[in-house]
Length: 87
Image 1 (tube, rainbow, N blue to C red):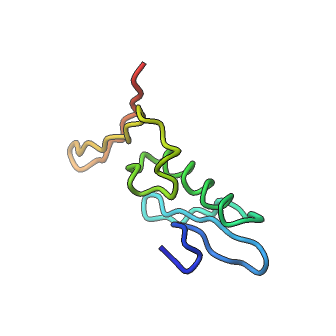
Image 2 (cartoon, rainbow, N blue to C red):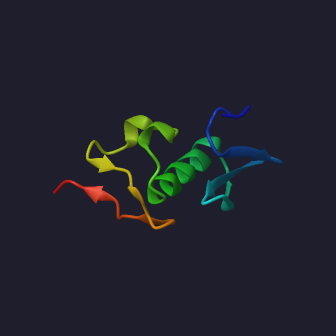
Image 3 (cartoon, one colour):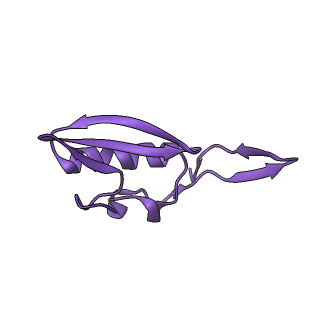
């Protein structure tokens, strides 16, 4: 966490930037008017990347049926399965 109070959110002038590190690469998510908007963008990207809900900014907004992607090691190659959802 940083001085803004949200994971992946940084102040840039009068606006707020959201970034996320996926597969050891920093991904720029955009510039937003409020830190909350930037934090929501971070959470959306984190869910798409298969992060655990505990790694998000707004735990109360995560669906109860969300399960993160599974990483399976197969012969030195990491295979990421699809996001699992209960139907």
